[in-house]
Amino acid sequence: MREDETRTAAVLMSGGIESAVLCATMLAEHRRVQPIYIRCGLRWEEVELASVRSFLAAIAADGLAPLVVLDEPIREVYGAHWSTDGPEVPGAETPDEAVYLPGRNLLLTVKSAVWCRLREVPTLALGSLGSNPFPDSTDDFFRDLESVVGRALSRGPRLVRPFARLHKADVIRRGEGLPLHLTFSCIRPVAGMHCGRCNKCAERRKGFRDAHALDRTRYAEPE
Image 1 (cartoon, helix red, strand yellow):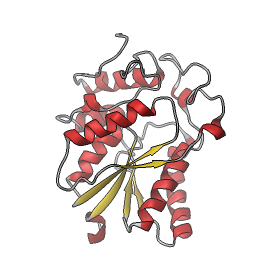
Image 2 (cartoon, helix red, strand yellow; image 1 turned 120 degrees about the horizontal axis):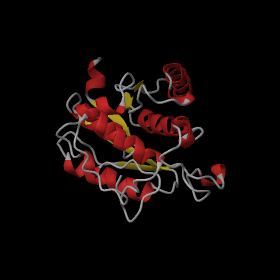
Image 3 (tube, helix red, strand yellow; image 1 turned 120 degrees about the vertical axis):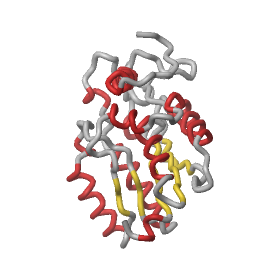
Image 4 (cartoon, helix red, strand yellow; image 1 turned 135 degrees about the horizontal axis):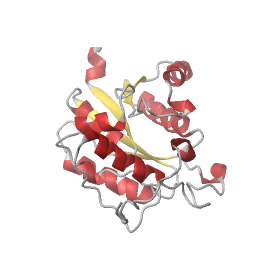
């Protein structure tokens, strides 16, 4: 790793376990870590953003910069979509593909990369997992995207995905000792809690079970 890359790195925060553990990990490797959250107008973001703030407050350290929140409205593009205010969200019985958000990684990465380039932040870290089944989460996709961003910005940030060969249970084990109960993964929050019934809640529960770790998450509906 080059010397300039050990100084500052940005982390794209999603509110979930992966980006939270990634942020804490980057703090141990960089002098300064800049968390970035991008608000798109999705139905769970109010609770998710509050969770990001709570987690960052809990791991506060000298090298952790204040959270930057950027806006990238998607409602007019998605229309009546389950992620905005459309039909019922995918339930626990649905496959991972049911929660695919078209173009999401592209939009979030490009927006964050431009922000980093304008502030001379050389590294942008994302918490993408190896088990992610979506077309905008592959090695080829991010390699091509980094190349395009670099050309568009004439020296864009390096895109890193430290968890690209891991599964959720692996990340949960890496996050042992962190306040993972403050993270948020639900797409249908109920009174500020995980609903316990959606696709993402099911994935979260499975991750803790597979990691043989205590799940301190507050679910509105128990298993």
